[in-house]
Length: 472
Image (tube, rainbow, N blue to C red):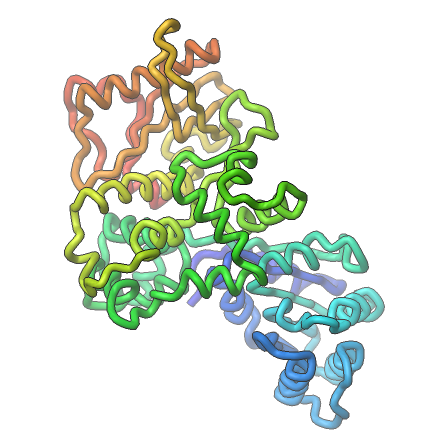
């Protein structure tokens, strides 16, 4: 059963109904459901489907390709010596297919492109020289190695340049979609539990598929990550190795960002990782961003080249906090509830979830139709100028000359604004106005799961956003 993905399903349907041949590339973070989307959307309409063979040589890949050809009805042929001959056989299968629209789904494309093979040249020849001239071919390509997909298909500068009809960048599930997913599997969790699960696993359907009905959330987390031979205990290494052919440099980048809550500039990252300052480093940042591991954002008033990179992937954050040096306690998560270590992580993880749901926050503010940009902002203390020093993780700067200063606080109960919290918010507003000379009105917004208590400090808060709003 497909959850969400309405836009992606519509794109696939439009391509299927088109009067000319279409070429679609599907990419995104591993485990996000790319293959599942295609199979569930077009399963009965697929003329030919093949998935690359991980770690295989050219001969292995061609053998598997021939097996797929036989499975889909082409029986009389000689084994091809190279990809050019293999794609000639695919043409023959298409010619003899009774399907009105020939849907060709090539999955794990990067694994088919073995060292020294002619795969890309053959793919280019198949599409440019044959399939695109027909009216009845829908070619869909997909791959787990996102860097390969971006470099060779999405941003191809050779024969496939500007040849795509559509590109689908498949994103993680939102909180609402995760709720719909567990409901479809008859797993009972309240929204706060779903939120805490999202803080650990993000919106990756594959991870959520391991949740076991009848267990509490802490029991499920122990079972998946901390038990002996836990289902996902090696997921971190598999994840980056499957996405990037040489993962070490990528891991160095996310490891460095994992130590800096507010993120780092490109120059700071270079210094922390000791990687070479080159276009290749920039490419790695772009690939990590495209996979959803990091986000690139601007600090208000700063230039483009001073952009900040921040680790945003929930699972990677959880790994560096609790799994990098895995505890021996098989019931670690159950026994760590409400400890200082977990509570500190909750604060950071909740902020990341909020940053992944800015669209929902804008809806709650009633400004989804107002032109706005999201920024962070920071300044150092300067006692002579009366500046306290502030870090604003999220501010929504609106065209109607209002800035929503968002204060994100995780809590398992109604949050009480103390004098210290009220002073902190007031200092942030005053620091920002003093340093930037902005004439915009500052509207403090409190984002917290259960709302805020009605006390003498609550009156300065212009809007409260709760878990219910994040699930919209």
